[in-house]
Length: 91
Image (cartoon, rainbow, N blue to C red):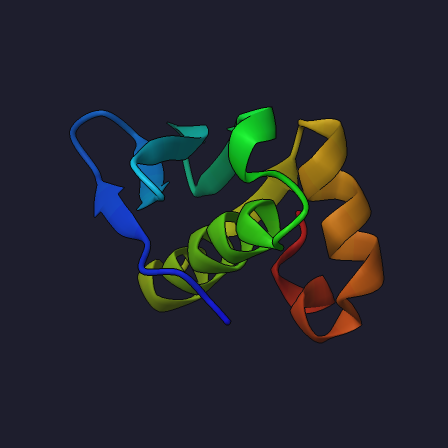
């Protein structure tokens, strides 16, 4: 079941809290590119698809804002490979 993801544009991060534990995705904007720098899910809440929910939220935000996405973190890169429906956003 997808989690509720919160976007904080000022801090350039997406977060969610599950069972009182925060998971995050950090990014940087570089021109028209959203660069996913880090996806972090603590072990206590791992294995539930939370990182995927965070990455999907970042890709959806990029789509709505007109950004290309560069998944610089290894998890986001692997996720993008598994989700070809987002391939047009890669750049």
